[in-house]
Length: 224
Image (cartoon, rainbow, N blue to C red):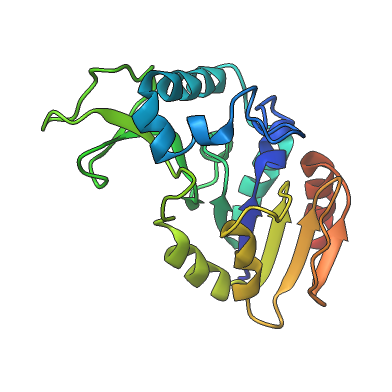
């Protein structure tokens, strides 16, 4: 049984209607990224930050997994599959994948500002005054710019054990996630699905220049 590791980015969920946040000018839906996705931004204007993520969380109720999400889940019938996603949505879970590492956190979770290990499931808006049991304000369970990525070491170990690496819908420009390709074994076969793939220097990489849903059809055929 092959161990397939799937690294997914914003392009994976774009076909479900999930906005990819960052526009060509570097703004996230009209916001300076540092004002809505950094500890400094949260300290300066917590209401703005909470509202930004509340809108993202509400959007999750309006979208569904696309066929690419479902096809990744189907791979579990014949392979060991681990999904490492940069996305903060829950579409992989809803499509049926069972082993998922959320590299940048999860929209449907919150954590205490006083204890980062105090994490809870949360499906509604977060408001100022929503606190943990010890009285600390709750915040989105999201890795912001300037914060450590707690799942990095786990993701590295997973990539090291991969027989096949699928990279889907990511620009390979966001670090440290983009560096994970460097931790697979030299003989690991890599497939990179993206309609506008970045240049990646790896002799074992196979580029499929298609959207996620079309590219995953090719992968299912290749892996038969």
